[in-house]
Length: 509
Image (cartoon, rainbow, N blue to C red):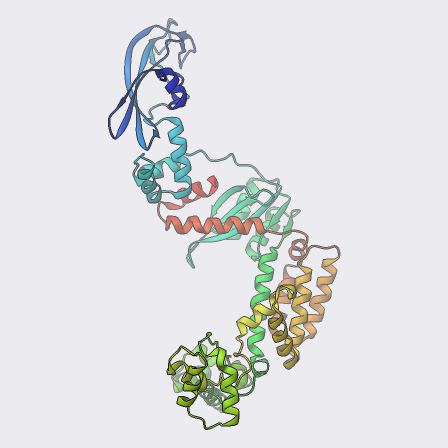
């Protein structure tokens, strides 16, 4: 049978600096009676050692749970007399620094565990979890614990990562600064303008490299505050912007590549699109303004502008996106039957595929035929899916996807040229010597191609060329990862408790 001192060393290891006089089981909690050791203690003012007791004070301390039950320590501490004559503190109460802090009612190790919880979950979620941990705290207490956690000391990194995130989308933003080499959070600034970052950089010199996105405001702030610093653009943002321009280019050429499949009768939507385009251009040819065209045709001004900018109605065509259905496995049978007997009834086709194993109803089959899907070799591809195929590494595509891309690029010369430029730009994003010269040649070739949406992308690269060149051997992925975690924290806090507490929690991660 273990003695009390042995039990303290096993179960109550955090109380080893005390003298445990007894342990009581009170059903929902475990009460430990303890006192401090009879050892001299230094005076907090003059530092003189004293072991002369003037009296005793009782303190109630909550410790970490044991066996799923709360542990409460009834601690008796001494009030000692200072031996130094003339000390302003004639008596003082001894402390247990490794067990509990001054004025606190929770043990230091329990406060540390709760601090780790509130750092991850903040207010209400921490309060709910504390019930499971047998240490009940309120959401307000959780926020106070979070605010008392000490922040890491501010240091100036050599490589600084900069990015912004939304506190309230389209209204309020903030800027996060990290060490791009280690991912350590450095600071969080209210706002995302050039003045905010410039003020921070001027007051804390020492940064040599700044990794940022394509923001002109951040670039201007770095140029004004640290003219000798190297600015690095973010490769992820470069690729994301390039993907958006590629998708816009594919949509503008959908009139040619979307017709690779056998022709099908134009639907109601396509016919109304052609009629609307013709009406708008007839009014424009007569000298009617855009606003008047929108009023006469009962359209929005944005829709009228979009139709007015389009030179041919075919460019407005959008390939429909079909979901997989139960009829797909019987497409070959339907195509053969309708080719040999175009007047075959849908009911007859329904009975035939029922015998072949079709388990659906008549309505899906009827929609399948009226949409023209039975005659097509494959469902019509959408611009977004084609963009994904073009922007995926060829080695990661299935054989069927590779063949589909080859057929579509063969049907449209601009699409074939776009595919070549996509592959060339993707290779430039891999760090290698001489990428800056290759990028110049790529932009020159791109400007000569009939790809107007990518021309704007090339112009944007030239406006921030030094940062783009530095982005080829460097990257800003750590900043993006930290920013993603920051957005999760922002959503979790739902904008409550103010910016100061949000900043405190971000810097503790």
